[in-house]
Amino acid sequence: MRARRLMNEINIVPYVDVMLVLLVIFMVTAPLVNPGVIDLPSVGKSSQPPAAPLEVIVRRDQSLMLRERDKGRADERAVTAAQLVAALREKQKKSPDQPVVISADKEVRYEAVLKVMDELQRQNIRRVGLLVKPANP
Image 1: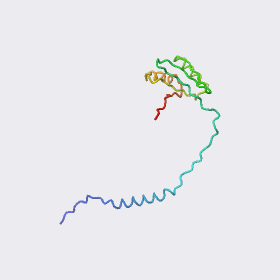
Image 2: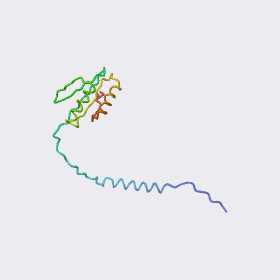
Image 3: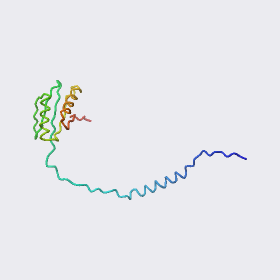
Image 4: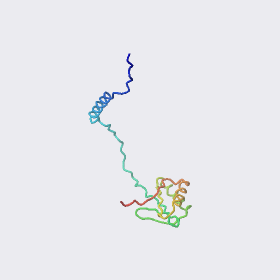
């Protein structure tokens, strides 16, 4: 009596045939399927233009300036940290969505910028960001 050998090969030809048939079916039916049409709601134009951001400037000597842009003109004044927080709170009380950006001279230490940002966040000043100059390609 002859011992039967184990068959350790898998015949994948039928699997490949099935996959090719499925691929052809999907390729033929995909262009025929209509994508869902979404009817989006519409809104009127906003009556209020977006508020110009208040700019907190950190100078090389780590002094603070506050620049307010209003209708084409910019008012700039030196402030202390306490005056800065009070002015920003007052502006955000009138306009809650008033953005605030911090711009700093590139020679200023990163720590000084973070100190200003941390103080504003601790005082619950919202919408604080950093102002950067775009690089020229």
